[in-house]
Length: 374
Ligand code: SF4
Image 1: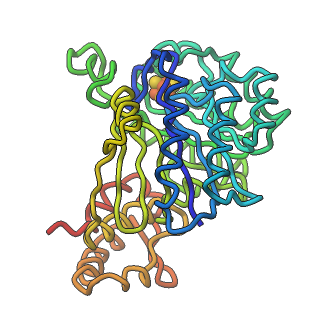
Image 2: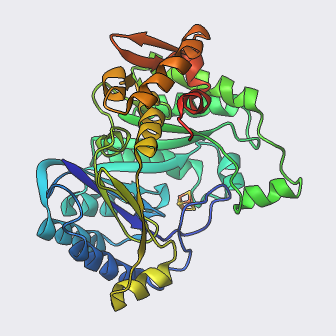
Image 3: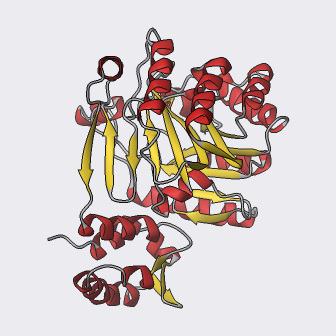
């Protein structure tokens, strides 16, 4: 089984925290759609299997596409791959795009899961982030989507220095009342090259307070667990069994093909990533020139990656999988895990290592302690 990721590199406006690849000009939109269709043809043999379990339209903002354009891409995927009848087909969407008519069209062309970029239900937060929707649109879009789709996820951001702990409590309560089957909750990070990053460099924005982020993270786990969501990955919560299959396959090292500018691919042994520039991508696809960079994954890369992704999930890090690596990695793992367990950041049960609640607050640090750096 495998998945396809399609990167739609357009947004209506730039959110102040975002460092994904996108353009706010949509002039090349129909050319990009055609190039995506062409890339699907060019890379139809990339995956070790033709059978697709998941398709994911991400970005950028895939909901800037017309439903016909989404349909063209799905038709091309169907031409070169076998889409399982029960495949999960997700589209990331922004609240302002989700009219009832558009939602119906999405359903008709084959989308069966929506991931809605809500981020906050508070107007001041949304304005500070430079989102193009308001709180009313956020709520209404979820309700409208729920009339047509069962499988809905919403994204929220916590820990922003522009907001307050009370606002985050309100956001959690509002999300729980709206009752989507899946919630992704990310802590704000300030990235170089973003507006927030520039403001920080000029001291126009205060640094994020680590303690506040940790408190809000723990509050999220507690509130969502009480409301019946499983905390199945550091940033992801789902009603029982309603895990995002596409992202879960990333975390479980299944192969995927990434199509479109800046998209990444993984075939089990190599990673490759497409050029993060719409113009260069179009030109290269048109002229048959290389448009991606390839990296061969060493055993060390694969070990470190397994540590990073597995520890973040509720399925944990399997010692039997560690046994498949060279003994040097096994010894390194066994040596370093003792301190982590005695610090109560992780526990081992039936040969599987899980982060404790305390450990989840330091997930990246625990992973770093287990990484093998030669
Ligand atoms: S957060 Fe989403 S909508 Fe905002 S700029 Fe980034 S990709 Fe576009």
